[in-house]
Length: 235
Ligand code: SAM
Image (cartoon, rainbow, N blue to C red):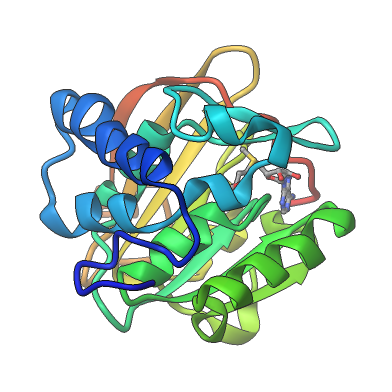
């Protein structure tokens, strides 16, 4: 990066820089993304570095793009929405399931999080690692191959968990690994999917079911209908 607001990267064209700023102004702000820190992170991270070189011209378009192996880098608005609803604070430990290209990890790192990211497709992990290192986000992102539906218990609990693939139901491991006060953002469903925000109360049993007194340790909110690739795992 070459300037204080973090929006200009060495060697990037003024067209790409302008396209990234336009993405924020025309795709995110009008749809209600309002957190200045999230908007700044989306304006900072060079999404064009996370897509196939042949698709660089589409990197700031309003849709998901293929990243090979039958999976996609999510639409910028979806990344911004999930990040905003996860309410990331500097220093938060964040679990990310479905790291793909590494783009969402970079956005979380730009917000000051310590990111623990899991990706099931081995071939995506080394390129994601290389991009994150090259762009200066690498020290904040721990990235490994694996089945994220089983969580990453060694580093739990997490202040936030973001899942970028749709689960038929919410994996129990992710519930177990959410810190008190933590936020889980996850697409749920198979054909019809919805994005859900699950917040663990500061006190209360770590179960989505009501206990004997009818109290729940979590609140749950449906955010919007979505279409994600499936979460393929055992959890
Ligand atoms: N966040 C990614 C990015 O910024 O490029 C996009 C992710 S893509 C929409 C969803 C990813 O979830 C795919 O890369 C897919 O391989 C991965 N995935 C699916 N099931 C998984 C699992 N059980 N554990 C880890 N990753 C999984």
